[in-house]
Image (cartoon, rainbow, N blue to C red; front, side, top):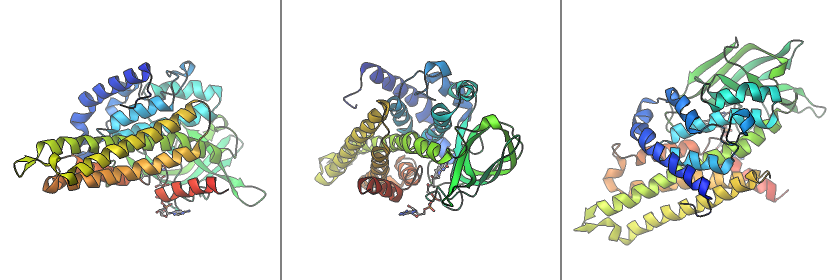
Amino acid sequence: MFQFFNDDQKMLQKLVKEFAEQEIAPHAAEWDEKDHCPVEMWPTFGQMGFFGIFVPAQYGGPGLGLTERAIVLEEISRHSAGLGIAIMTHDLAIASILNFGTEEQKLKYLPQLISGEKVGGLSVTEPSGGSDFANQSTTIDQTEEGFLINGRKCFITNSHIAQINVITGTSGVNEKGRKILSAVIVPEGTPGWAAGRKENKLGLRGSITGDIVCTDVKVPADCIIGAVGDGAKIAMHTIGHFGRSGMAAIATGVIRACRDESVKFAKDRVVYGKPISSLQAIQFIVSANEVDLSAAHAMLFNATAIYDRGETCIQDMAAVKVFASEAAANASKRTIDLMGGYGIINEYPVGRYLRDSMAIIPSGGTSHIMAVIIAGNLCR
Ligand SMILES: Cc1cc2nc3c(=O)[nH]c(=O)nc-3n(C[C@H](O)[C@H](O)[C@H](O)COP(=O)(O)OP(=O)(O)OC[C@H]3O[C@@H](n4cnc5c(N)ncnc54)[C@H](O)[C@@H]3O)c2cc1C
């Protein structure tokens, strides 16, 4: 356990750990195999306090922080990283509205999302490239009645299940000829909003990822989040803090799963008449998994603590996102190696951990983009 948690955080971790062992672990392999997102459990997750844990009480949340959110996501993702990203992304709609929305928007949308009555999503990425985020082709045009949205988004988590969607798009160009982005809320049932192609993913299965197609989607003027032109700021703040700390927590859950599996298998597997844990090469693997887990915890809870005391920390979030996601892939590969032939048998979960880690790497921004952010910050 991470040593610096206070008593409330330790209690939260214990509660979520027990819930995850009972309600998530037994289904994780099946959700992965069938690519089933357990949306039927959303109200239960809402009752457990998994959604919007950082939201103040007046909007239906417990008023905690990104540290508590990371604790929850790690415990869930220790068993199902696919479910982890579905819950994580639901929170991105919540964070966009909480941090940049009007009082009316917060009172209208947050309680339904926090209770799990509705599912949320955030649509930013387009076929032209998620990394080239400023160059969006989706248009959000201001009209006399409100806003008109046209375009296509791809790789959108919760695409086929989200009822309250935040979407970004271009609302014209500024005096330097650069696109200005806006963010709007598209309420459930708005005509012209449709989920398109659903991806058949390598990993993070059990979360739904797909296209969103907007054809003359009309939303009233009060659906804009912030002002016209605030879209880049909203998306960067939300993905940069809530998205990346969330993906890092999910990756940390996968590293922990690898650490636990490597210890268990090393102690159980007997070769030459003794457990393989007595072999130095095997000890190196167990030890490397533990060191990566400790480092991921330290970086993750350092970054969330900075945010929770009221500071932005895009660089720290990028650093833990790249470290934890790459470490999860390394830990999964090492653990498969440790298990010999058993490592590639699907009865064991380690193959899923490797597939999940590879899908975690691009989600919320690739490792290359994290490096660009870190170096850009240091060298500016
Ligand atoms: C499982 C999953 C869930 C996702 N969920 C969401 C979601 O809910 N909402 C959403 O909006 N998006 C979502 N995404 C999209 C994700 O944010 C993008 O996949 C990511 O930003 C990368 O964009 P891309 O896939 O278009 O790759 P590209 O941008 O096309 O990049 C291709 C390659 O070029 C490299 N590259 C690009 N630019 C640079 C550069 N400047 N320097 C060095 N290398 C560079 C990249 O690192 C990568 O290796 C999700 C993705 C996945 C995989």
